[in-house]
Every structure is written in C-alpha cells, then in structure tokens.
Length: 136
Image (cartoon, rainbow, N blue to C red; front, side, top):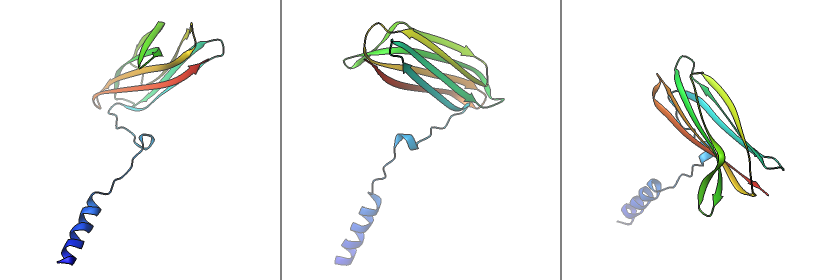
C-alpha cells in the first residue's frame, strides 16, 4: 500500500511541475510579417522620436496600417500628447518610418505602436508594441 501511495505522489509531482517561460523567449507566430520593431528616444531638450519598422514576407504582404502615438502617463492611464498621433499606410514588403513631437513637460512617456498587417498568409497580424522613457 505504501508503494502505491508513493507511486501516486510521484506522478502527481511529475505532472504539477511548473515550467517558467519569459516573454523575451516567446516569439509570436505571424502570418504575414517576420519582424516588427519599435524604438523611442527623448532628447535633453524634450524632442520625442518614435521609430518603427517591419519586415514582411515577400509575395505575401497586401497592406499595412501602423498607428503611432506618443503618450504621457498620468497616474494609471496614458494620454496621447498634442500632435502626437500618426497613422501610416503602405503596401511595401518592408517599411520603416519615424515621427517626432516636442514635449511640453517632464514625465514618463511611451511610444505606443499598433501594426495591422494584411496579406495572403492568413488572418491579419495585429501587433502592439510599447517603449517607455522618462523625460526629466
């Protein structure tokens, strides 16, 4: 009887072991695009520049819409700064662009970029990336 209980406890332990995965190790599968990347910098004078790029699958990309917003953190919410929102559309397989805005005050800011990439590879790829910086 003790051997059976020990065997059952071994199986329970074996099947309840936790495996830790970190977000940096997980690569989401995309139907139409290989990679997306966003960078965000703020100069000492307060000029905020958000840059993005994507590398699409050749012969697959039909269109891409990229919405870029520069947002300031107020408590728990993010609010888009004045003149800090852009929407770009393209049919290019690979594409990159930058947008800048002059910040009016110090604080915590982020570049919020939403990629929607359509193509013949399957359903649209909808990818959101945020990069945060502090302007002091």
